[in-house]
Image (tube, rainbow, N blue to C red; front, side, top):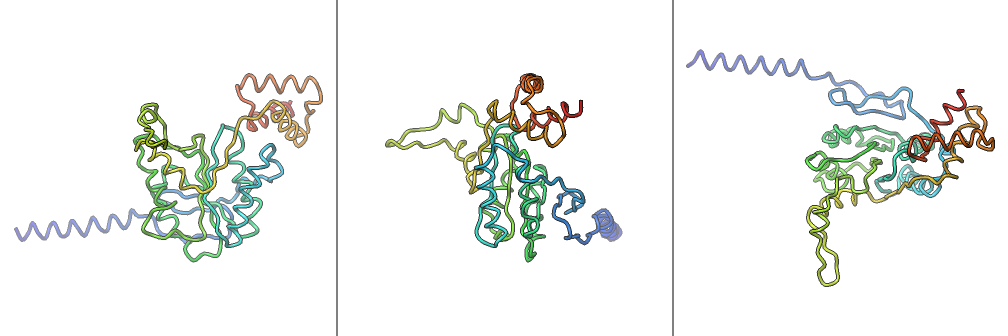
Length: 280
């Protein structure tokens, strides 16, 4: 028995040493960058060549630009501000607007940290890096949505509002999604909604979904563009790329046919058409 105990103790020491060898070495973070990525196992990594978009390049979203710039201006000035959820139709500039905010406010100390949905469970560890830092950090979660059996959204809820640890005052979360409530909604859940004394009482399933998106204090909605808005965006990019604008009837027809084939009149489709047409 004594030999067995010694063997177990030595095995325990060996396992501990192996774990220490396998853990990634803590590396000093280079804060002389304006954008970062969080990578599981590697931590916070600087983005050497961030994708910066001037705000003037984003058209047909004036109210959204005004609201997010106002909120971000309050944030970088050290005043109170809200987490932001940008939701709506695909290709309407939600992610581009957040990148443009970085471009517009990086000189004021704003920093952007991209966090994949799969890494949201590590949010408490991520925000620990920002306590006491002079910069202002926006955690950027792109194309955020969860399946019904995905529990990682609870980590996001805790960081947004509800954890026992106070979130750093220099951190906000800006997220984009095609879903307003971030979780799938089923007909049966809405059928369970009751009317009590003239008041609507949602089912527990609906309340759970709403409670997540409600933790974002500011909602910005994005809707499909009209034909004229689509052509205006296409013209903007055609002028930048050196192509004929849609004042030329051939270009206008080609732009409309391009959107028809793609089944969408979005800013993304307009840019893709401009690249193709100007390149020709």
